[in-house]
Image 1 (cartoon, rainbow, N blue to C red):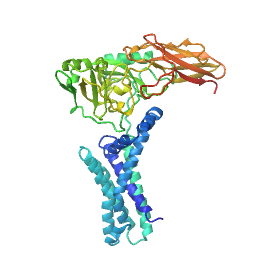
Image 2 (image 1 turned 45 degrees about the horizontal axis):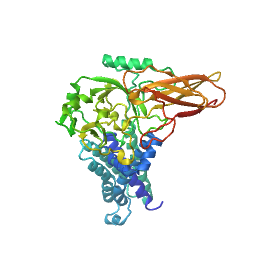
Image 3 (image 1 turned 180 degrees about the vertical axis):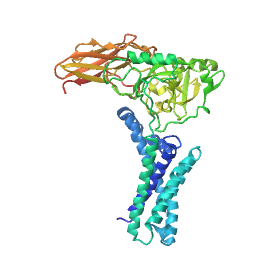
Length: 502
């Protein structure tokens, strides 16, 4: 075995165990020691790479970025542990300062095994859960490492000691990691299906969700009118954990009188329910980053009127340091939502409060909303600095999400169509590559001005053929045929797919 390999292996194991111990203590929350590394990865990633991840990889891109942040964190803690590990294994210039034996072993354990935990504590010392982070990583590591050293003894050949210590450190790291995943899972927040209406739902919510369920087309495999798995796109991979009892929303800037509201103030206002569809500006033409929910909250106008805005632009600020700027006229008819599908708004979707701006791309529907800043001059939002311009109204699109094959050469194609506040008047389907068109069956429209509709079309065909779909919005305008990618201001074009016998 090369002389430096055992020290590197033990150091990396110590780094992994420190990260796993932090996760065991706090889960995937802001106090998790990987959080600053995740922000660093995002900050240093080239705009072209971020664009590729958003448009081509979707959720997978976020997962890969988070795995990279975890790897960087483990490496950083491992490098911090390396001097102590080298001392523990009798490597490096400092190894001769102590006699071989338990004295050196204890010092090596303290430097090589406890140091990563101390750094984990330092990175999260300003957060209430930092003590739990240090305890979860430090105590487990220290006890396991000391036990490994004492069990190995000092009267055995060095090679035997090295193997035992390497295996012991790796076992500790894997054990803590497995326990952390067992306790917290992967950290992804799970939500009850909106098809399961909450027992304590208000009558209006129960009626609306029941209506959406009944109006959904009976197409096998097709997402219902209220999405069962709502997409998520954020600038980071660790969602803010905002305490609603300490949270407040302020309206500042070019206003006659600045306003501030706590959560109790919002709950005291009349609650309004709206079906709203959101689509990410980075969504591919036939991508899956488009979903619908029943949101409940207070109209933005109720709060803006009290502040009396003097400017014609607005910046929404989130607790995750995200912000976006757009015309204030788009915000006036919006909703500030704190409930989703009859339940409290989930953390992953912006709890305690998020903005919903009718008919506009998802990027301006800021989550974890903390401030509405009114301005009398133009500026640039977070994504505009990175080459995107998705602050305008959404493009009309018909998605082809489901193809079902029946006996006798019969086919069923189906999907969803969305045109923002313009609404969907019709969806047309061509099964011969665009030579002829037929109107598809549409689901009955849900209440609201900013909601998608489902469509389906059944037909007979022999052999392989090209299916094309296009939507006509409520103003009578057909979806444009020219295909263009998501960047900079949203994907356009007709969706097509080759269909035929398998």
